[in-house]
Length: 136
Image (cartoon, rainbow, N blue to C red):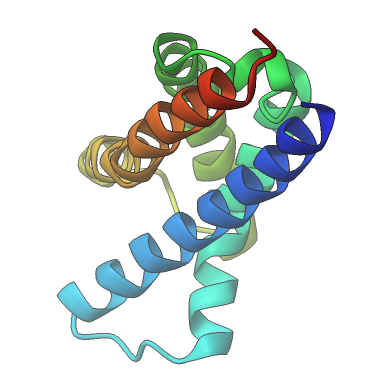
């Protein structure tokens, strides 16, 4: 059972990283900007830093955080609610540009969809695997 939990945390981290990179790719394409790897990484970095800070604060990758799908949803929303403003502040300082309310709202909403869009199925599958492998 511990091995399932350990690997689940790594899967969650990898999936979250993919979600941030896909979100950034989609945003660049939607705005007609080049979507090359360095540009995607540079654009995603402030939000990833905010996400990692929230992950540490809320223990986002600990087994307790994802043992039940409902808890996974709540902690994901809480983490992104902490991480999004941090990412926006880091981005504003990095680029020397102000934070616009419209960008903040769109980034918050769309990235939350990207995160929940893959984390909810993960939580359901993880719960099913835990049930099947639990000692009887």
